[in-house]
Length: 71
Ligand SMILES: [Zn+2]
Ligand SMILES: [Zn+2]
Image 1 (cartoon, rainbow, N blue to C red):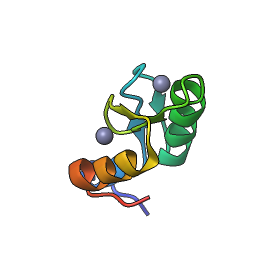
Image 2 (cartoon, rainbow, N blue to C red; image 1 turned 135 degrees about the vertical axis):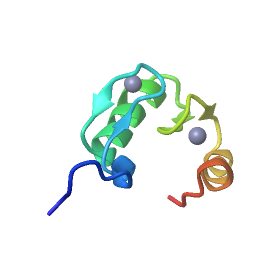
Image 3 (tube, rainbow, N blue to C red; image 1 turned 30 degrees about the vertical axis):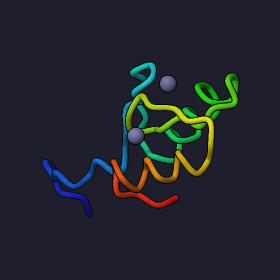
Image 4 (tube, helix red, strand yellow; image 1 turned 180 degrees about the horizontal axis):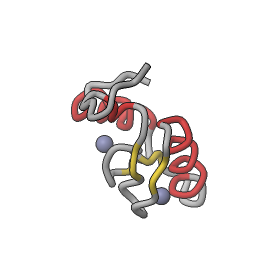
């Protein structure tokens, strides 16, 4: 059961910071970012902010530092 007006639901959905497209779940957003925004340039694009990285270590460090997430 999910009550209305819950504020902790931001993990369930997301908006692409690169093109503004909305997704109903986070894995779809991540997939979109990886597919559309990083594949063409061989970059690793953050799905939470418009930053992108050339190296996986930089990306992981960024995710940890800025978003507190480990991938
Ligand atoms: Zn996008
Ligand atoms: Zn980020």
